[in-house]
Image (tube, rainbow, N blue to C red):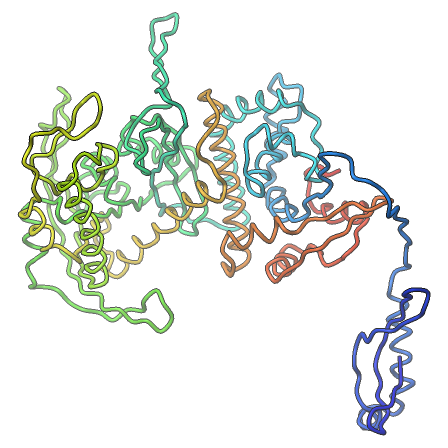
Length: 591
């Protein structure tokens, strides 16, 4: 405690002494105040704060000296830094008890290396430093993890992970339900695809028994409009945004047929009595409607759905009902921005809809009547967006008509829908010459009539229009999840060849996404994943001498995670013993 004079008055403060260039210097740690003012609060401020200084000094751990050779030279290609931030996703991994899962499964497998060690490395690397499996193995020393396996073992493990994918998904569902709570009766489902930078599809193969195994990496409708072969991933997510299950299927399969097998598997494996699926209009098919909820009359007890519905793609009666202004009502609702209010103009009806199903001959000759609630609403903001998007595409269409030689089938995507008499040369993909190209003005005028209108249909006939709208809006989380997997986790392009390795790759991405969502929720969704991940990547340390490490990063997000997970990352210097203590609450092995 130091006393100093300031403007003729005595000022008290806590200072800390240190030595620089052989001289003792002091720096102020805490300003206490003027003595005459402190005497109003304390009988003897000097004695009180001297005692407080002694108490604080006693709490400071004994200083240890670290000897550093300032002339030491770095060897070539040296990377000494280790990441400390991965202790947060590792804490969640341990709470999910994945180590026990792999230990139990490995007892029945002829595997000589530790499956959990391999899985941890690949998951943490995908979460923090997404790269290839080889690079993850080569840079394994950036983590404080045991890696008692070879690169070949890493690839061998992928085959095991593929076999354990469904049991692991089921296990994780139980653990998430126990740790966080999960209401699986309402789930969101969507499909995306991932490309491979290869020139050809996988070939079909014939087994000795004559059965044919289809190729896995196949060309299909790419979400990114690329010509490369793809595989597709269907993701099921709960109302909290936490992934529930996933499936991977060939690129040339229809995404529409992937929903029902996933729902049936999840209901059976997870013990769910009834489930309501929320999906966009691309999955709104007769089969996906009928086989989920059946006739859906008052005596039905099937599953449910909330689907987007294309207004333009609907039948004439539905389009006419949409444009008929009779029955619309308006509600003021909070918008997406603070203090924003929107007008929700909507109407709905319970409708007996006739759909066509496949008969025994494989043709859609069977008619079925189902009951569903149909809700349509109008949004000026959506109308402006549709108009702007169409104008952009029409500008491209006009340029194509004026300069057809500049375009091919691949580069003319979107514009072709508005051009009459357009065709392509089959072999080259070039636009066929000698045709009178023009805009399809009737099609444009027809589309303009429906600008701003959107429809949602559901089996849940007692849902209010606002509940239907709010439920369907939850799809943004699954769309965001795909963006995270593709961009943050860099899941594509995929550089694996074997089908089982590819499926294991997406299991690793699924696990990383699960960890990320749980961390987001534990932090109250105050920070986006990009901020969380970057903070954890920056939270690294550099080895000094005598098993000490220098830590040089801590921010608001790190501090929030420290409080939530009970982990102290505030120290500038840490011994290896201290780092072990940071990981001590985890069951997984650390160095």
